Amino acid sequence: MNELMNDYYDIAVIGGGASALWFTSFLLSQIKASSNKIPSIAIIDSNNAPGKKLLMTGNGRCNVTNLDIDSSSYNTDDFDKLSMILNSFTPEDTINYLRNELGIMTVNKGSLIYPMTLKAITVNNGLVNHVKTLGADLILDTKVTSVSKSEDKDIYLLKSSDKFSIYAKYVVFAFGGASYPKTGSDGKSFSLLRGFVDKSDLVKLLPSLVQLNTKNMFPGKISGTRTSASLLLSDKKGIISCEKGEILFTDYGISGILVMQLSGIINRYFEENNRYPSLECDLLPDLSLEEAIDWVLKIKNNSLGSLKLSDSLQGILLPEIVESILDESELKKYLDFNLSDLNESDIRRIFTLLKKVKFRISSSLGFDNAQVTSGGIKLQSLTNNMELKGKENIFIIGEAVNVDGPCGGYNLQWAWSSAVQAARGIYDRL
Image (cartoon, rainbow, N blue to C red; front, side, top):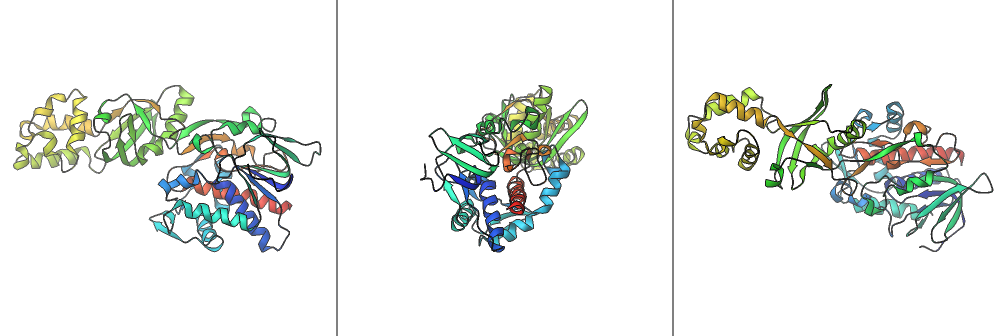
């Protein structure tokens, strides 16, 4: 544990991840610009260094935001408030803050925004150096075990298991969710809010942006193979969601951005219905069924017709994918056929299957592999400035709140925007 600088701080931030660092950085920047007295701030983290999960984002490249962000792409309990918060600190604001305050230039990859170095450590170091330079204390290797009102009702008492304790006027809960528990955000820190929130304020934590286990055997046979596809989620009531992108077949089932984007919806559906929705995969998303059939009929009479079926189709789909799927279906007999042996009816049956492969979901891989957490403290339970309603000077930001978005900078933008709202709320009071 770090040597304690004070036993009282104006502000105590629990957690040392993206939202915690951004909150502290933004607040101190605002105060410095106004020439007001810098408040004492402690960032308390259970890790030996801050930003452990931030360093993992974007596969270590840190997709800091997305120019196409829209509140409708997120999961939350209050879309109006989410929209207001995101509009109050936009992706353009993020880019400008990185450039002007942290000295970090960014680059575009389409709508995706990265640091120019394409390294997450650039963003992490920029934030850490900034908060240190402006006087915040980093208290590391320290896990807060309780937060309570002190005898002086205007301040809070924070304790840890190793006898550490401090008092603070404001407490900002930025401890993350339950994804990647090895980084310290294991979901247990929600117990710190006991006494401040009711059960009705908390949405159950579930893995999101995570891979899926399937009962199908064929993905394991082509583990490591990627292809373009579209996935359709549905139930008896109709279509739930549809995504197009890249799918990755694995030993356990399916992965890839396409799968990750739908995983939160799938897990929430299971939580509500105690069963998984139907998941149907189109392995030829850029061709209609009729277009695919017409194409095959045209090549059937040239030299490709003498090839085994899977080899004749290699121009639109990898042979190993065709073989593994047919092998696990009622159309297995066609594996030994040459293309020229098939009539139009046979071809229609084969392509109907390839455009409607049904995955039987058994589970997701869980929090150990999830990029973000779905669930947390309801956004409805917080004010527009992220303060817990009815609990003065208690703020909750980032992944601890019931807001999660798709891949591509959405979740970091939420971390930045929610942190800024809390910083503005506290700044006005200071």
